[in-house]
Length: 108
Length: 115
Image (cartoon, chains in turn red, green):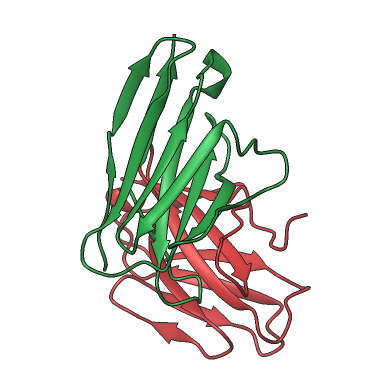
């Protein structure tokens, strides 16, 4: 029972901003939005999370709509090493539930 | 970010034997550790949640007698796959958290192949 919907794949040119969308229309008021990514054959890597305000760190920015029903992860200057599967997760408690994610491919 | 170390990174074992995988949080105390399994081209599936000093909570469909989890300290959890069979071959990943808000840190995973 997926709580989030993401496109299965996206392409982005190297050096450009990669914008990854996520729909979470059934999110409840105390659930956070988390983003992780998984490079092939490695463990997932935490990127960012937020509740209702936009967030930014050294890796990415997270834009959450005012109604919290969708969000966008922004990688400002994508590099080839950003090619990975990106997971948008909505969760309140520990024990993250992974959907199928978006396979982001950065093109040289 | 915090470091979670998983060992071994890969293992090949014979059918019917048992394999132990270790997950250590190196620079923080993990009150909760999670074990996931990932088959090729699929997403991670949560197997169980373990809290230090208590019994693990298994997800539906995961056999607790086959996948033994021990979380004896705040920095170490182990997963033992007992009487392994070829269908248990998978990528096993642990994660650790001490913040209770989902900002979990993952190990590098263990590739188990049962022959």
